[in-house]
Image (cartoon, rainbow, N blue to C red):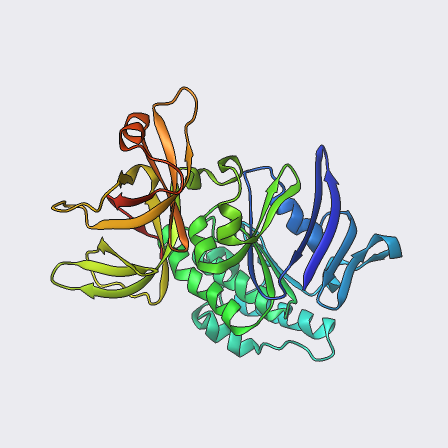
Length: 361
């Protein structure tokens, strides 16, 4: 179990956050810029001065009332920042060996991960003799993640570790992060603005605003319970849903998915390589509403949904319709005129006609 009650101050910014999180799995730390995400990680790591309490499993890292403050070097944690910092004078191999030795110094048992095992897991064999300055962004991130894991942490703190690399390299690295969570049950705090990463990695979320915890709990419940002003900009115009991949039609170039008990299809130029649940992004403006199931239409996706809420911003010709399809939720932006003509009301059953959707896998 990870629980903390922290008070930290840097300049004019004040952080006051209390939370109790799971002892395993990834928790997304989300919020707009300046909400305190990085400050929270730095306070937990002991990099910023803080008062209060931090408990990680059976260990107490901070307890101001008992004058306990474990220095950063003795906290069993792995930290990867937005711009991963490797020792520039050391080769990749020596960077990893340093972390391995750190684990040995912090515990009589040493690291539960073997050095060779982590090298193999992150496919670093060809990089071992190179210096950090010769690595690409994706390679640097892989080495930084491997180094954090080889230090045998009880807690992983990842501050937008994929933010500086391009989309293709990011997709290559996500499986490595998923592998960490699959191999060892430890808590991970994951700061990100990218809800593709949240959908792929995180089961829980902690939302910050102005240095305070606004909400925490399961990702889907938390994200749908807070205002758009506390979410990254991209999520205010689109939604992410999880769908189960079923099959691919090689003649029609269509990928078939299942959302609970309903079917969804997405055109693709080649057969996908993923399995199981995948995140799909739907733009609000790409969803139309019908009160009866349409026939003779070119739209391939018509999902039966229930209207959860209708928002009508003042001085706007548009209305925002929040929809629930089984366990998944997304939105539609339609005109006020259409809303009135269709006589839409909350709790009404409608069909969401999805013009296009984007795979985020």
